[in-house]
Length: 334
Image (cartoon, rainbow, N blue to C red; front, side, top):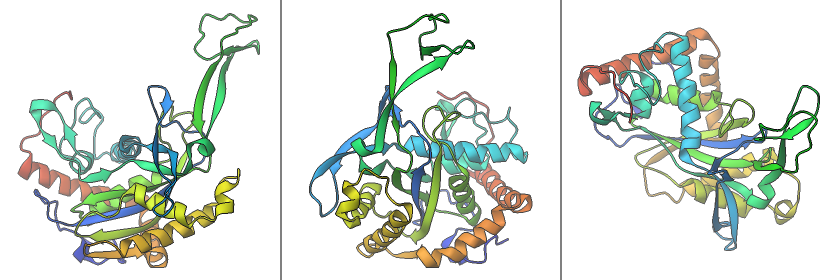
């Protein structure tokens, strides 16, 4: 049963194929920080030294958002929905502990549990880069922990007693609000249900990075989708194309980038980049994407709509698992 009226069914498989069949859908997303998230490894913010733009040959350091920092929160958002509407029981499938192997999360996002089996992820996410430089996109905070008496102690100094003064100060770099990370999420060989499942996860995920219960607020702005017979431009090249189009006075300003301008330029940049691709593709970007987004919003705004997506995705996953994974096993992940 078709769930969408705005997209031709020719872009989707009727069932999840076992082998790659050359259908791709690319979700064009700009991730916008709305608090002070942490994308870090070993206590330091992740960053990379790269060229500023495609035409601008200067180099600069950019904040990076590694693929796992993007895909894991989105995957967990989907798993939460599956449990809420009782498509998956908590004891049947525990993330990175005991995968159920026959639900939409396991089949779409993949799993690996040693000798018990594995499934390659159909969702491809690559490292995203901030548009602005590292220096302009982060700031350092001193972290303190208050006692009930109102006195402050630096974070991590559990031996400090109320009223005592400590000379040790713990500092942590945080990413500033209104920092933009263009990111393309790719789904291989989509069915209509897997398309909606992944897209819904992107739209409803709100926290990324470390300490997700306290900070890390990020909003995903979807600019369009591209259906193609191959992969498209990288996140880095899209980010560099955006940088090239930003006015010099804005790049030199200490103020955050204007979101409306970023979205306008990001849309124009990806449209231009797609003209250089050597693949067959159908683009729904900007105005042509609005009817699709409204169609999806109407579907995901009700419990009936969410359940219809999850039910169809679950039926497809069960059918795939029965045909290609075999008898369901419970095993611990390595």
